[in-house]
Length: 121
Image 1: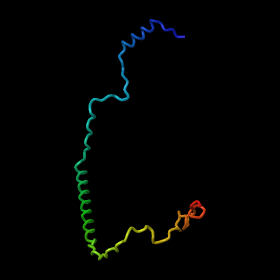
Image 2: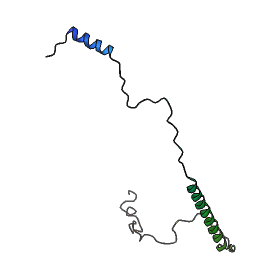
Image 3: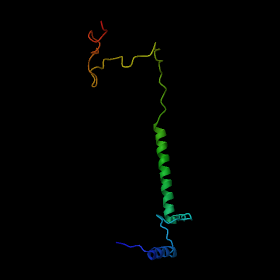
Image 4: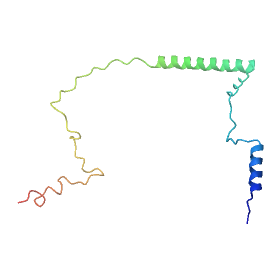
């Protein structure tokens, strides 16, 4: 097999101490902040076109708002009658029989409310 001798160990230690140590990084360390992004350059014609588009859109919006204000006539307040005073809290859905709806078992009386499942006597 392999024989490790004293001279081999000394040779490896000398080689390791003489060679420069290289550090391994996942990413290179940066001390300085990244340079600022360059501002996009826009030529004068493009700037004029964009300003015309903005002005056109603002004019359209103003015209639409005027049209909306003209068509919306103020509604006359309707005469309201006061609601009748309730004597207590109303039972929800008391105005009808909803046992026919899906999800209900269509029984008006519970099965356990019978002589067989009532008091022990």
